[in-house]
Image (cartoon, rainbow over all chains, first blue to last red; front, side, top):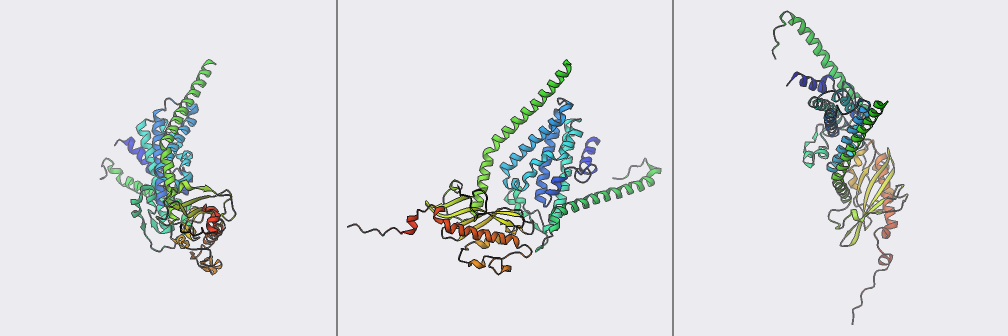
Amino acid sequence: MSDEIRAILKNGLWTQNPGIVQLLGLCPLLAISNNVVNALSLGLATTLVMAVASSSVSVFRNLIPSAIRIPVFILIIAVLVTVVELLIHAHMLALYVVLGVFIPLITTNCIVLARVEAFASKRNTLHSTLDAVAMGIGLTLVLVALGAMREIAGSGTLFAGFDLAFGPAAKALTLTLIPDYPGFLLAILPPGAFIGLGLLIAARNWIDARRAVRTERDGKAARPASAVQPAA
Amino acid sequence: MKTTLRTSLATALTLLAFAVIGATLLSGTHELTRERIAASERAAQLKLLAQTLPPGSFDNDLVQSARILPADPRLGLRQGSQAWIASRHGRPVAVVLEVAAPDGYAGEIRMLVGIGSDGSVSGVRVTGHRETPGLGDYIERGKSDWIEQFNGKTLASPPAKAWKVKKDGGAFDAVAGATLTPRAVIKAVRRTLEYFAAERDNLLDIPPAQTEVPPPPLQPSP
Protein backbone atom coordinates (compact mmCIF):
# COMPACT_ATOMS: atom_id res chain seq x y z
CA MET A 1 0.00 0.00 0.00
CA SER A 2 1.51 3.28 -1.01
CA ASP A 3 1.86 6.12 1.49
CA GLU A 4 -0.60 8.19 -0.51
CA ILE A 5 -3.34 5.58 -0.21
CA ARG A 6 -2.60 5.01 3.45
CA ALA A 7 -2.86 8.75 4.09
CA ILE A 8 -6.23 8.90 2.26
CA LEU A 9 -7.65 6.03 4.30
CA LYS A 10 -6.37 7.39 7.61
CA ASN A 11 -7.75 10.81 6.74
CA GLY A 12 -11.27 9.52 6.13
CA LEU A 13 -11.40 7.12 9.04
CA TRP A 14 -9.67 9.20 11.71
CA THR A 15 -7.85 12.49 11.06
CA GLN A 16 -10.62 14.16 9.04
CA ASN A 17 -13.51 11.87 10.03
CA PRO A 18 -16.67 13.55 8.65
CA GLY A 19 -18.80 12.60 11.65
CA ILE A 20 -16.64 13.59 14.61
CA VAL A 21 -13.99 15.95 13.17
CA GLN A 22 -15.45 17.82 10.20
CA LEU A 23 -18.97 17.55 11.69
CA LEU A 24 -20.47 17.56 8.21
CA GLY A 25 -23.82 15.94 7.54
CA LEU A 26 -25.05 16.29 11.10
CA CYS A 27 -28.74 16.28 10.22
CA PRO A 28 -28.96 12.61 9.18
CA LEU A 29 -26.28 11.71 11.72
CA LEU A 30 -28.38 12.98 14.59
CA ALA A 31 -31.78 12.06 13.26
CA ILE A 32 -31.28 8.50 12.12
CA SER A 33 -28.86 7.16 14.74
CA ASN A 34 -31.48 5.93 17.21
CA ASN A 35 -30.61 2.30 16.51
CA VAL A 36 -27.94 0.31 14.72
CA VAL A 37 -29.93 -0.90 11.74
CA ASN A 38 -31.04 2.60 10.68
CA ALA A 39 -27.55 3.99 11.23
CA LEU A 40 -25.83 1.21 9.29
CA SER A 41 -28.27 1.34 6.37
CA LEU A 42 -28.10 5.09 5.94
CA GLY A 43 -24.32 5.01 6.37
CA LEU A 44 -23.91 2.38 3.66
CA ALA A 45 -26.30 4.20 1.30
CA THR A 46 -24.32 7.42 1.82
CA THR A 47 -21.02 5.58 1.26
CA LEU A 48 -22.32 4.09 -1.98
CA VAL A 49 -23.49 7.49 -3.25
CA MET A 50 -20.18 9.10 -2.25
CA ALA A 51 -18.09 6.42 -3.95
CA VAL A 52 -19.98 6.60 -7.25
CA ALA A 53 -20.28 10.41 -7.15
CA SER A 54 -16.57 10.91 -6.48
CA SER A 55 -15.43 8.43 -9.10
CA SER A 56 -17.70 9.83 -11.80
CA VAL A 57 -16.77 13.43 -11.02
CA SER A 58 -13.13 12.42 -11.12
CA VAL A 59 -13.57 10.75 -14.51
CA PHE A 60 -15.28 13.84 -15.98
CA ARG A 61 -13.22 16.41 -14.05
CA ASN A 62 -11.49 17.74 -17.16
CA LEU A 63 -14.76 18.09 -19.05
CA ILE A 64 -16.55 20.17 -16.44
CA PRO A 65 -16.01 23.94 -16.82
CA SER A 66 -15.21 25.39 -13.41
CA ALA A 67 -17.96 28.02 -13.72
CA ILE A 68 -20.69 25.39 -13.63
CA ARG A 69 -18.95 22.72 -11.58
CA ILE A 70 -21.24 23.00 -8.55
CA PRO A 71 -24.50 22.57 -10.53
CA VAL A 72 -22.97 19.63 -12.38
CA PHE A 73 -21.78 18.03 -9.14
CA ILE A 74 -25.19 18.45 -7.57
CA LEU A 75 -26.84 17.07 -10.68
CA ILE A 76 -24.62 13.97 -10.55
CA ILE A 77 -25.21 13.49 -6.81
CA ALA A 78 -28.98 13.99 -7.11
CA VAL A 79 -29.22 11.46 -9.95
CA LEU A 80 -27.23 8.88 -7.98
CA VAL A 81 -29.27 9.41 -4.84
CA THR A 82 -32.51 9.00 -6.76
CA VAL A 83 -31.23 5.79 -8.34
CA VAL A 84 -30.28 4.44 -4.90
CA GLU A 85 -33.67 5.53 -3.55
CA LEU A 86 -35.53 3.72 -6.33
CA LEU A 87 -33.47 0.57 -5.77
CA ILE A 88 -34.11 0.58 -2.00
CA HIS A 89 -37.79 1.23 -2.65
CA ALA A 90 -37.95 -1.74 -5.01
CA HIS A 91 -35.93 -4.24 -3.03
CA MET A 92 -36.06 -3.21 0.64
CA LEU A 93 -39.48 -1.66 1.17
CA ALA A 94 -39.44 -1.95 4.97
CA LEU A 95 -36.13 -0.13 5.15
CA TYR A 96 -37.38 2.47 2.67
CA VAL A 97 -40.29 3.21 5.00
CA VAL A 98 -37.98 3.52 8.03
CA LEU A 99 -35.35 5.74 6.41
CA GLY A 100 -38.02 7.77 4.63
CA VAL A 101 -37.00 11.27 3.76
CA PHE A 102 -33.39 10.73 4.83
CA ILE A 103 -32.57 8.84 1.63
CA PRO A 104 -33.39 11.78 -0.70
CA LEU A 105 -31.71 14.07 1.83
CA ILE A 106 -28.35 12.38 1.11
CA THR A 107 -28.33 14.79 -1.85
CA THR A 108 -28.02 17.73 0.50
CA ASN A 109 -25.57 16.02 2.84
CA CYS A 110 -22.66 18.44 2.64
CA ILE A 111 -20.05 15.72 3.11
CA VAL A 112 -20.87 14.29 -0.33
CA LEU A 113 -20.47 17.63 -2.11
CA ALA A 114 -17.49 18.53 0.08
CA ARG A 115 -15.46 15.48 -0.96
CA VAL A 116 -16.43 15.89 -4.60
CA GLU A 117 -15.44 19.57 -4.63
CA ALA A 118 -12.37 19.37 -2.40
CA PHE A 119 -10.94 16.07 -3.57
CA ALA A 120 -12.51 14.32 -6.54
CA SER A 121 -12.52 17.34 -8.84
CA LYS A 122 -8.71 17.56 -8.54
CA ARG A 123 -7.42 14.00 -8.17
CA ASN A 124 -7.28 10.79 -10.15
CA THR A 125 -10.13 8.31 -10.12
CA LEU A 126 -8.56 5.65 -7.89
CA HIS A 127 -7.64 8.12 -5.17
CA SER A 128 -10.99 9.90 -5.41
CA THR A 129 -12.94 6.68 -5.05
CA LEU A 130 -10.79 5.56 -2.14
CA ASP A 131 -11.19 8.92 -0.45
CA ALA A 132 -14.98 8.78 -0.83
CA VAL A 133 -15.13 5.21 0.47
CA ALA A 134 -12.87 6.04 3.43
CA MET A 135 -14.95 9.12 4.29
CA GLY A 136 -18.18 7.14 3.88
CA ILE A 137 -16.95 4.30 6.08
CA GLY A 138 -15.71 6.86 8.61
CA LEU A 139 -19.18 8.39 8.70
CA THR A 140 -20.81 4.95 8.87
CA LEU A 141 -18.62 3.93 11.83
CA VAL A 142 -19.62 7.06 13.74
CA LEU A 143 -23.29 6.48 12.86
CA VAL A 144 -23.12 2.86 14.01
CA ALA A 145 -21.26 3.73 17.22
CA LEU A 146 -23.82 6.40 18.01
CA GLY A 147 -26.68 4.08 17.01
CA ALA A 148 -25.33 1.30 19.25
CA MET A 149 -24.89 3.67 22.20
CA ARG A 150 -28.40 5.03 21.84
CA GLU A 151 -29.99 1.65 21.23
CA ILE A 152 -28.32 0.05 24.28
CA ALA A 153 -29.01 3.01 26.55
CA GLY A 154 -32.48 3.67 25.19
CA SER A 155 -34.03 0.23 24.81
CA GLY A 156 -31.50 -2.31 26.11
CA THR A 157 -31.21 -4.14 22.78
CA LEU A 158 -28.67 -4.29 19.99
CA PHE A 159 -29.25 -4.96 16.28
CA ALA A 160 -33.06 -4.95 16.69
CA GLY A 161 -34.87 -4.78 13.37
CA PHE A 162 -31.98 -6.06 11.25
CA ASP A 163 -34.53 -8.11 9.32
CA LEU A 164 -35.82 -4.84 7.80
CA ALA A 165 -32.58 -4.43 5.88
CA PHE A 166 -31.10 -7.90 5.55
CA GLY A 167 -34.05 -10.29 5.25
CA PRO A 168 -35.96 -12.38 7.81
CA ALA A 169 -32.89 -14.52 8.65
CA ALA A 170 -31.27 -11.49 10.31
CA LYS A 171 -33.99 -11.36 12.94
CA ALA A 172 -31.94 -13.84 14.97
CA LEU A 173 -29.21 -11.21 15.32
CA THR A 174 -31.25 -9.16 17.77
CA LEU A 175 -29.53 -9.18 21.14
CA THR A 176 -31.48 -8.31 24.24
CA LEU A 177 -28.64 -7.11 26.41
CA ILE A 178 -30.72 -6.05 29.37
CA PRO A 179 -33.89 -8.13 29.85
CA ASP A 180 -36.98 -6.24 31.06
CA TYR A 181 -35.18 -2.95 30.50
CA PRO A 182 -37.59 -0.12 31.29
CA GLY A 183 -36.10 2.04 28.52
CA PHE A 184 -34.34 5.37 28.77
CA LEU A 185 -36.26 7.77 26.62
CA LEU A 186 -33.66 10.56 26.56
CA ALA A 187 -31.24 8.35 24.65
CA ILE A 188 -33.74 7.76 21.83
CA LEU A 189 -34.96 11.34 21.54
CA PRO A 190 -32.87 14.00 19.75
CA PRO A 191 -31.04 15.23 22.91
CA GLY A 192 -29.60 11.73 23.25
CA ALA A 193 -28.08 12.12 19.79
CA PHE A 194 -26.36 15.39 20.73
CA ILE A 195 -25.08 14.02 24.04
CA GLY A 196 -23.86 10.80 22.39
CA LEU A 197 -22.12 12.68 19.60
CA GLY A 198 -20.49 14.97 22.19
CA LEU A 199 -19.16 11.95 24.06
CA LEU A 200 -17.78 10.44 20.84
CA ILE A 201 -16.01 13.68 19.90
CA ALA A 202 -14.60 13.95 23.43
CA ALA A 203 -13.37 10.35 23.30
CA ARG A 204 -11.64 10.93 19.97
CA ASN A 205 -9.97 14.12 21.20
CA TRP A 206 -8.85 12.35 24.37
CA ILE A 207 -7.22 9.54 22.35
CA ASP A 208 -5.50 12.08 20.10
CA ALA A 209 -4.29 14.12 23.07
CA ARG A 210 -2.88 11.07 24.82
CA ARG A 211 -1.19 9.96 21.65
CA ALA A 212 0.33 13.41 21.16
CA VAL A 213 1.72 13.37 24.70
CA ARG A 214 3.19 9.93 24.18
CA THR A 215 4.74 10.85 20.82
CA GLU A 216 6.29 13.92 22.39
CA ARG A 217 7.73 11.90 25.26
CA ASP A 218 9.00 9.17 22.95
CA GLY A 219 10.38 11.80 20.61
CA LYS A 220 12.41 13.36 23.43
CA ALA A 221 13.65 9.98 24.61
CA ALA A 222 14.46 8.75 21.13
CA ARG A 223 16.16 11.88 19.83
CA PRO A 224 19.72 10.79 20.69
CA ALA A 225 19.22 7.58 18.71
CA SER A 226 16.85 8.82 16.02
CA ALA A 227 18.32 6.48 13.43
CA VAL A 228 16.99 3.49 15.31
CA GLN A 229 13.60 2.40 13.94
CA PRO A 230 11.05 1.80 16.69
CA ALA A 231 9.98 -1.83 16.88
CA ALA A 232 6.61 -2.32 15.21
CA MET B 1 -16.60 39.10 -27.51
CA LYS B 2 -16.72 36.12 -29.78
CA THR B 3 -14.71 33.97 -27.34
CA THR B 4 -17.01 34.95 -24.47
CA LEU B 5 -19.97 33.83 -26.50
CA ARG B 6 -18.27 30.61 -27.44
CA THR B 7 -17.31 29.86 -23.82
CA SER B 8 -20.82 30.53 -22.58
CA LEU B 9 -22.28 28.35 -25.27
CA ALA B 10 -19.85 25.52 -24.53
CA THR B 11 -20.61 25.79 -20.81
CA ALA B 12 -24.35 25.73 -21.40
CA LEU B 13 -24.04 22.76 -23.72
CA THR B 14 -21.94 20.87 -21.16
CA LEU B 15 -24.58 21.45 -18.50
CA LEU B 16 -27.25 20.36 -20.96
CA ALA B 17 -25.30 17.20 -21.80
CA PHE B 18 -24.99 16.27 -18.14
CA ALA B 19 -28.69 16.97 -17.60
CA VAL B 20 -29.61 14.74 -20.53
CA ILE B 21 -27.37 11.91 -19.29
CA GLY B 22 -28.84 12.29 -15.80
CA ALA B 23 -32.40 12.25 -17.06
CA THR B 24 -31.69 9.17 -19.18
CA LEU B 25 -30.22 7.33 -16.21
CA LEU B 26 -33.16 8.27 -14.03
CA SER B 27 -35.84 7.28 -16.49
CA GLY B 28 -33.99 4.02 -17.14
CA THR B 29 -33.85 3.16 -13.45
CA HIS B 30 -37.46 4.22 -13.03
CA GLU B 31 -38.52 1.89 -15.84
CA LEU B 32 -36.48 -0.98 -14.43
CA THR B 33 -37.76 -0.64 -10.88
CA ARG B 34 -41.34 0.47 -11.53
CA GLU B 35 -42.93 -2.96 -11.62
CA ARG B 36 -40.87 -4.21 -8.73
CA ILE B 37 -41.83 -1.18 -6.61
CA ALA B 38 -45.52 -1.59 -7.42
CA ALA B 39 -45.30 -5.30 -6.62
CA SER B 40 -43.57 -4.81 -3.28
CA GLU B 41 -45.92 -1.97 -2.29
CA ARG B 42 -48.82 -4.25 -3.09
CA ALA B 43 -47.31 -7.19 -1.23
CA ALA B 44 -46.65 -5.02 1.82
CA GLN B 45 -50.20 -3.68 1.76
CA LEU B 46 -51.64 -7.18 1.39
CA LYS B 47 -49.49 -8.45 4.24
CA LEU B 48 -50.69 -5.67 6.50
CA LEU B 49 -54.34 -6.16 5.48
CA ALA B 50 -54.10 -9.92 5.98
CA GLN B 51 -52.87 -9.35 9.54
CA THR B 52 -56.19 -7.77 10.45
CA LEU B 53 -58.15 -10.82 9.30
CA PRO B 54 -58.10 -14.40 10.58
CA PRO B 55 -55.72 -16.43 8.38
CA GLY B 56 -57.49 -18.39 5.67
CA SER B 57 -60.81 -16.67 6.28
CA PHE B 58 -61.00 -15.14 2.81
CA ASP B 59 -60.09 -16.12 -0.73
CA ASN B 60 -60.45 -12.95 -2.78
CA ASP B 61 -57.83 -10.45 -3.89
CA LEU B 62 -58.03 -7.80 -1.18
CA VAL B 63 -56.23 -5.11 -3.17
CA GLN B 64 -58.83 -5.47 -5.93
CA SER B 65 -61.67 -5.13 -3.43
CA ALA B 66 -60.59 -1.66 -2.30
CA ARG B 67 -63.19 1.09 -2.37
CA ILE B 68 -63.31 4.65 -1.16
CA LEU B 69 -65.79 5.56 1.56
CA PRO B 70 -67.17 9.07 1.94
CA ALA B 71 -65.47 11.05 4.72
CA ASP B 72 -67.10 10.35 8.06
CA PRO B 73 -66.22 11.79 11.48
CA ARG B 74 -66.47 8.33 13.03
CA LEU B 75 -63.58 7.18 10.87
CA GLY B 76 -61.50 10.20 11.84
CA LEU B 77 -60.09 10.90 8.39
CA ARG B 78 -60.56 14.19 6.66
CA GLN B 79 -60.53 12.59 3.24
CA GLY B 80 -62.55 9.57 2.37
CA SER B 81 -60.95 6.46 3.78
CA GLN B 82 -60.37 3.19 2.01
CA ALA B 83 -62.16 -0.03 2.79
CA TRP B 84 -61.30 -3.53 1.66
CA ILE B 85 -63.92 -6.25 1.54
CA ALA B 86 -62.79 -9.78 2.31
CA SER B 87 -64.97 -12.51 0.92
CA ARG B 88 -64.99 -16.26 0.82
CA HIS B 89 -66.66 -18.19 -1.98
CA GLY B 90 -68.06 -14.89 -3.21
CA ARG B 91 -69.76 -13.97 0.08
CA PRO B 92 -68.45 -11.00 2.06
CA VAL B 93 -67.08 -12.17 5.42
CA ALA B 94 -65.22 -9.15 6.74
CA VAL B 95 -64.22 -5.59 6.01
CA VAL B 96 -60.97 -3.77 6.72
CA LEU B 97 -61.39 -0.06 7.35
CA GLU B 98 -58.77 2.65 7.23
CA VAL B 99 -59.31 4.90 10.25
CA ALA B 100 -57.47 7.51 12.29
CA ALA B 101 -57.46 8.39 15.97
CA PRO B 102 -57.13 12.18 15.90
CA ASP B 103 -56.25 12.53 19.60
CA GLY B 104 -52.99 10.63 20.03
CA TYR B 105 -50.25 12.05 22.23
CA ALA B 106 -48.47 13.43 19.17
CA GLY B 107 -51.20 13.87 16.60
CA GLU B 108 -53.01 11.40 14.45
CA ILE B 109 -52.64 7.63 14.80
CA ARG B 110 -53.58 5.86 11.57
CA MET B 111 -54.86 2.33 11.77
CA LEU B 112 -56.45 -0.51 9.86
CA VAL B 113 -59.36 -2.13 11.66
CA GLY B 114 -60.64 -5.48 10.47
CA ILE B 115 -64.26 -6.30 11.40
CA GLY B 116 -65.99 -9.62 10.74
CA SER B 117 -69.50 -9.70 9.35
CA ASP B 118 -70.69 -10.62 12.87
CA GLY B 119 -69.49 -7.24 14.14
CA SER B 120 -66.45 -8.44 16.08
CA VAL B 121 -62.97 -7.04 15.67
CA SER B 122 -60.76 -9.47 13.76
CA GLY B 123 -57.59 -7.44 14.04
CA VAL B 124 -56.18 -3.93 14.39
CA ARG B 125 -52.86 -2.68 13.05
CA VAL B 126 -51.28 0.74 13.42
CA THR B 127 -49.98 2.00 10.08
CA GLY B 128 -48.68 5.41 11.04
CA HIS B 129 -48.15 7.45 14.18
CA ARG B 130 -45.77 9.93 15.79
CA GLU B 131 -46.07 8.70 19.39
CA THR B 132 -42.97 8.85 21.57
CA PRO B 133 -40.49 6.14 20.53
CA GLY B 134 -39.93 3.64 23.31
CA LEU B 135 -42.93 4.88 25.27
CA GLY B 136 -46.13 5.19 23.28
CA ASP B 137 -45.06 3.04 20.35
CA TYR B 138 -46.06 -0.27 21.96
CA ILE B 139 -49.28 0.05 19.93
CA GLU B 140 -47.22 -1.17 16.95
CA ARG B 141 -47.45 -4.93 16.49
CA GLY B 142 -43.70 -5.03 15.87
CA LYS B 143 -43.04 -3.62 19.35
CA SER B 144 -45.54 -5.51 21.49
CA ASP B 145 -48.70 -7.61 21.21
CA TRP B 146 -50.80 -4.97 23.00
CA ILE B 147 -52.90 -4.35 19.89
CA GLU B 148 -53.98 -8.02 19.84
CA GLN B 149 -56.31 -7.52 22.80
CA PHE B 150 -58.92 -5.98 20.49
CA ASN B 151 -59.37 -9.30 18.72
CA GLY B 152 -62.88 -10.66 19.21
CA LYS B 153 -64.18 -7.53 20.92
CA THR B 154 -67.63 -6.26 19.93
CA LEU B 155 -69.75 -3.24 20.77
CA ALA B 156 -71.49 -5.27 23.50
CA SER B 157 -68.49 -7.13 24.88
CA PRO B 158 -66.93 -5.44 26.73
CA PRO B 159 -69.89 -3.11 27.51
CA ALA B 160 -69.68 0.49 26.38
CA LYS B 161 -68.44 1.82 29.71
CA ALA B 162 -65.57 -0.67 29.78
CA TRP B 163 -64.07 0.56 26.48
CA LYS B 164 -61.31 2.26 28.45
CA VAL B 165 -57.88 1.48 29.81
CA LYS B 166 -57.81 -0.39 33.13
CA LYS B 167 -56.55 2.73 34.88
CA ASP B 168 -59.84 4.45 33.98
CA GLY B 169 -61.87 1.43 35.10
CA GLY B 170 -62.06 -0.22 31.69
CA ALA B 171 -61.13 -3.58 30.22
CA PHE B 172 -57.95 -2.76 28.30
CA ASP B 173 -54.35 -2.98 29.46
CA ALA B 174 -52.01 -0.05 29.03
CA VAL B 175 -48.39 0.65 29.84
CA ALA B 176 -47.95 2.93 32.84
CA GLY B 177 -46.77 6.37 31.82
CA ALA B 178 -48.28 6.18 28.35
CA THR B 179 -52.06 6.10 28.63
CA LEU B 180 -52.96 8.91 26.24
CA THR B 181 -51.93 6.76 23.29
CA PRO B 182 -54.03 3.66 24.14
CA ARG B 183 -56.99 5.86 25.11
CA ALA B 184 -56.97 7.35 21.61
CA VAL B 185 -56.68 3.92 19.99
CA ILE B 186 -59.45 2.38 22.09
CA LYS B 187 -61.81 5.25 21.32
CA ALA B 188 -61.06 5.03 17.61
CA VAL B 189 -61.68 1.27 17.48
CA ARG B 190 -64.96 1.74 19.35
CA ARG B 191 -66.05 4.47 16.92
CA THR B 192 -65.15 2.21 14.00
CA LEU B 193 -67.37 -0.54 15.42
CA GLU B 194 -70.22 1.96 15.76
CA TYR B 195 -69.69 3.04 12.17
CA PHE B 196 -69.71 -0.58 11.05
CA ALA B 197 -72.90 -1.32 12.99
CA ALA B 198 -74.65 1.56 11.23
CA GLU B 199 -73.23 0.93 7.76
CA ARG B 200 -72.85 -2.85 7.80
CA ASP B 201 -75.20 -3.72 4.95
CA ASN B 202 -73.88 -0.90 2.87
CA LEU B 203 -70.29 -1.92 3.43
CA LEU B 204 -70.72 -5.61 2.83
CA ASP B 205 -72.92 -5.03 -0.25
CA ILE B 206 -75.77 -7.00 1.22
CA PRO B 207 -79.07 -5.98 -0.37
CA PRO B 208 -81.45 -4.80 2.39
CA ALA B 209 -84.10 -7.37 1.53
CA GLN B 210 -81.73 -10.22 2.10
CA THR B 211 -80.98 -9.35 5.71
CA GLU B 212 -84.32 -7.95 6.80
CA VAL B 213 -86.64 -10.49 5.25
CA PRO B 214 -85.27 -14.01 5.19
CA PRO B 215 -86.13 -15.71 1.92
CA PRO B 216 -89.33 -17.75 2.26
CA PRO B 217 -88.67 -21.46 2.61
CA LEU B 218 -88.98 -23.19 -0.70
CA GLN B 219 -92.24 -24.95 -1.20
CA PRO B 220 -91.76 -28.52 -2.20
CA SER B 221 -92.93 -28.69 -5.76
CA PRO B 222 -95.76 -31.02 -6.37
